[in-house]
Image 1 (cartoon, helix red, strand yellow):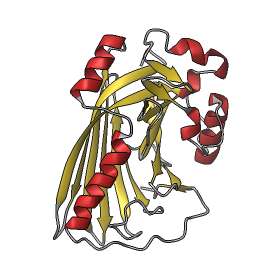
Image 2 (image 1 turned 90 degrees about the vertical axis):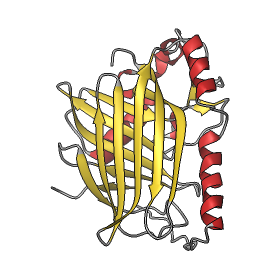
Image 3 (image 1 turned 120 degrees about the vertical axis):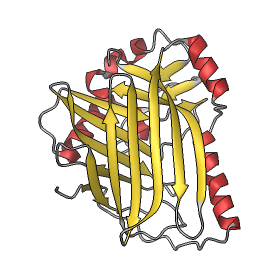
Length: 256
């Protein structure tokens, strides 16, 4: 990735399996940012070629550092320090973050992904997961394979209990990112989700075109989550009680 901040066209597919099935597709834009090469002192110059995109400022599209990590810092150096500290990853050249941008300062990132690169290869991945209750959890790979297994540690949906595990496969290439997630309980796949994102040229015309084509509006991700939840409720799927929030905010993958 030559640019420090890239814009991607993306598609998310969610599919609930079992007795009561449910599926939806969500089109959105993503940002792919090399957070390890950005300094707080040069934030204002990074988005010069796209006037509709800003960092830590109001704009049509914006990225805010405090939305990530421990959600306490607005300095990029602090975000890098936190991610490296919890992951215990010592050797890397770059850290790329894939996330949703804010639209007119409104946004929600149910999942953000950090890719650690060393010698031009992705060696580790961190999945930063948030729910609409305000919780956050980091699932961290501890090996150099693309597919990883994580015990579910955070209550994400009121329509699933807090049990089972995730199997996650992720790949990043020069111009695309692919993520596949299976949620499994007692050897049964309960949910399949996938994310495909492709880099587009970063200029104002193409950006506006992508916003219109994908029907992107402020709060689209958050609104769609609740809209799909209403559909599940109308299908009479049982609502599970939310457990107490975990004090430990990160988990490592099982060893292969």
